[in-house]
Image 1 (spheres, rainbow, N blue to C red):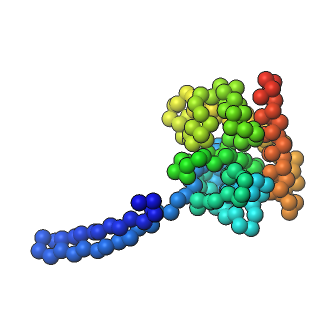
Image 2 (cartoon, helix red, strand yellow):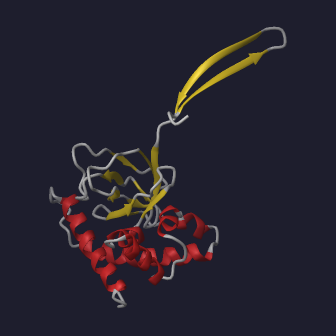
Image 3 (cartoon, rainbow, N blue to C red):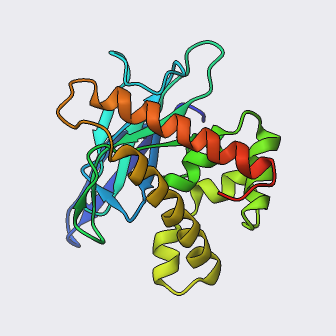
Length: 219
């Protein structure tokens, strides 16, 4: 118990003879989720362990699949830092548009068993300085529930199934996404510091959006 190592015994019989085989299975903790503006395929996703939102030498990355899903090994944060997921680039599968400069961020849930959605909406929520401020932002946006519930909700899939709350979340998500894409479109994609610039622009704009909302102002 607690080791994630399980012993199994398989048995087979043809009615006259039988055989058994002992197996040991190790279940590895993983961070699973989806990147959504529309769902983004081939987006590079990594866990930021040191708080700079840039991929360091020891920060592994994966690319999202054709539907925007990803799976990363469980990661331990550097001292004093909260883990965040960062997504760079990708193609919006709903429009076919390449969003090479789009950087998105999400806080990681407290349990690695909880899936996480990385989106423009999660980027704004993650920009708030405290858990209380993040919850206030969610409330101000008219989204019910707790922040971790929002982070785990695949509102794209739910909206496609007709869920009205999910459709509302996706409307907000797309509105924030349009603002980010407009800002990031000014970046020179030929620059070798593309990822740095993308993260800088996203960080600046989501922080401004977060601050305006918390101050009771329109965006």
